[in-house]
Figure 1 (cartoon, rainbow, N blue to C red):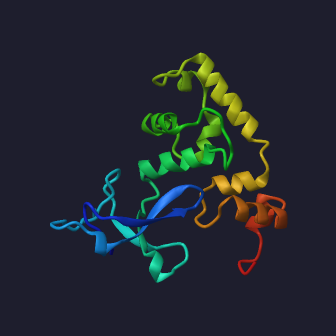
Figure 2 (cartoon, rainbow, N blue to C red):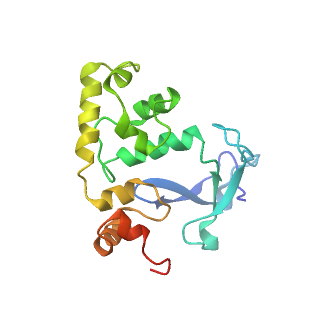
Figure 3 (cartoon, rainbow, N blue to C red):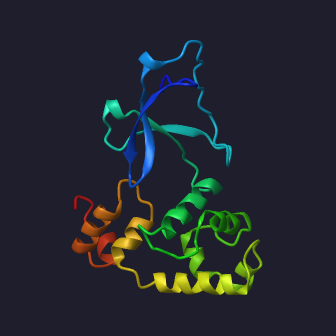
Length: 186
């Protein structure tokens, strides 16, 4: 666990495409009287236990990441949907954070696959949505069906699989089925 305190100056690095990550506190710049930050023990969204996960490189200098391990966490689902629809993945126009939150909260979407079975009337009934917005979203989802394999792989949110790795996998394995049946060593 990190010794980070309120008011610390910290070293931040780029993690993934743009998400910043705190690497470490720089104790020499710590103001007098600062207090340690106590990380939560439970997920604020679903109350499940949080676990420390080694950072992507496993390098001691990079530290650890606190993660909710619940597959049913609504906050994780919202972020998963948002990532899936992002420009670096499936590029679904109109599938932003607010809409993702509404889709999850309303129970219309429980996983990414549910996006493709949404009905216009149900989407139009959401706050700040109407018939035209719902129609545009459904068209954007339909267009996304024809995106290249690498975009789907990047959109699935597999840890350590960004756009570049997804492109390499899609070059090697021409379909999801080829990838699914590939030997584990590959």
